[in-house]
Length: 233
Image (cartoon, rainbow, N blue to C red; front, side, top):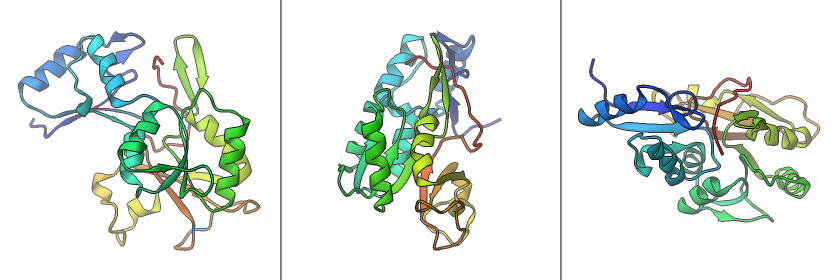
């Protein structure tokens, strides 16, 4: 069988905890020897690609930063650069800066929510205010929990839920992926999810061109059920 490339998930696929999955390193070396392109994809957004790569190489897995795609990278590449209020850690901030976004906590085009261990009421209040004023609400991924070495930890989806409670947001398949009229997304090449935002007081999203759609690429994560990846911080 001929491969044009291989995309690896990370948590539970090439490593578990602090150890590489048996056989993963040999298989990756086999692909390298055959000059088959490799990408390591993760819906974690808190770490830059270089940090993820350093973790993989420390486990004996052949990797370069260019081989890594995080949900922060996917989100920044998908959205049109503009002004943004970001709730997240260094992986998201660096991706947004690299793609030309300008951080703004007064009148941004987007409010982007990601994994943030310093999330607090001030950040929540700011996000709710900005979304209520018209900013698009974007989440890097919907995972509600993470399985870390010390146990279960809240994930991005938990932070999204806090904002959702005040802004009425529903997780749903992105309509542009399935709409052949859309020229911005090739359905055969995309794996995405969306959050549709309605103004406070609206209890359900309105389908159609008037819907204020909020799009976000989520690599290989379309189901709204919580996933619990095993990933060290």
